[in-house]
Amino acid sequence: MGRIILYFAVLVLLPVSMQAACLKGDCRNGVGRLKSADGRVYEGEFRNGFLWGRGTLAYPDGVKYFGQFVRGRFSGQGKLESPDGRKYSGSFRNGVIDGKGTLVRADGLRYTGDFSLGRFNGHGTLSYPDGREYTGDFRDNVIDGQGRLVYADGSSFTGRFHDGKPAGKGVRCYPDGTRYTGMYVGDKREGHGILEMTDGSRYEGNFHRDLYDGRGVLISADGRRFAGRFADGQLVPPAPADVGRSEAAASGAVAAGITAGQDAVKTKTVGIVSAGDVADGLLLADGVVYTDTTKQERFSGTAQLSLPDGSTYDGNFKNGLMAGKGTKRFADGRKYVGFFENGRQSGQGEYTYPDGAAYRGEFKDGEFSGAGEYIFPDGSTYKGEFRNGVFDGPGTLTYKDGKQYKGSFRNDLPDGVGTLLSPDGSVYEGGFKAGRRNGDGKLTFPDGRVFQGRFKDDMLVQPLKNGG
Image (cartoon, rainbow, N blue to C red):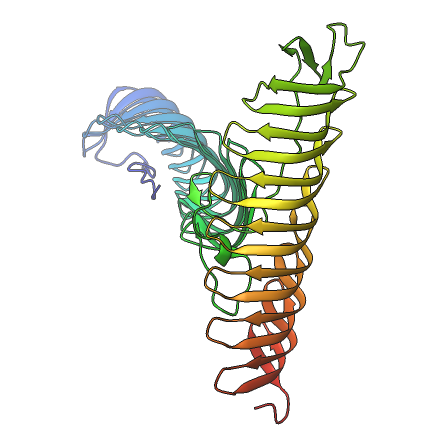
């Protein structure tokens, strides 16, 4: 979307000249027909020798104006037409397109809205020949301000525009139903935003050139959670000093069609039935299994059921809900073996994924909670405490390349006091925050060098005296 040129936006008509010839009627005060020396022909009302009132002006090149005149200039409502198909209908002031009107260009481009001094200025709607349509603010013939652009494929952007392009915060809706809310530059997602996919997956974090780039959290359609640093749409291993979980998960996890992968995989609450389905003589209704169609008696015992979402359950029920030991297999290849309570995973269990990832440990209300072990697809492992599906509390994270962090975690990242052992033999002992060395600490290298003091975002910012 570039600048829109109005080829006949400004047209000034001078008073009748001495060379003009009155061909018919009263060309002074009344109605007449006047032809000027340059070939222009006017037919309409006159006042004090000026074109004044309603009339029609035809130019030698085929351009025609129909409408109101004041003191020889277009003023008021009128229509301006060109032989090549350009047409304007609307308000004029002092010979210039000014006010509200509609301009249609020969190529089919159409603008309806506010004009000032012959240019798009104010609020309007611009329809393109290729099917795009923008409604919003304009400045000097350029889309600029708040508006909504609907693309030919039905997708849209609603938000801030500058110099004809999306620029700033807005909402982008894609043809498949995907929705992005956040910062935009040109036709690219840029800066912080939230991308919600139609399959239920969701990414929140930083974007660069339309791709995940920077800090972010990706939640897949099946409830798995990946958090860390992204680059070019992919979760990448951090630098040795950055001890977040992304390195362990970078190989193999794919969510929402974009390679990502890391952090604790959060389980979803598992409902056992969908309303109205009947299987093996049991009625499945409102999330409860009944023994009769009147829904008077809830089922208790052992059953094998095929559920409407494609998953299967083989195990125990109590009062119509999954309870006790059971096995649930999901349509996408996930599998849970363990204990249930009130229809959710609770107690000891094992959750496995098609990509090789697995969790073994305690569950509560359908999520990892308590002591457990998470194995990443590349063989990296985390052993320790979980809460609400994420690493939280004391634990040990061992990477495939041999690097190991032992200490406190919060929201899936090292946070608190811990020790980082690197494959090159270096050791850091001290404070961490959000996966980085922060606070008092000591970094020891294999050659004996020691750096001790206060760290901030992995950098030593305040060395101790005589700290090496």
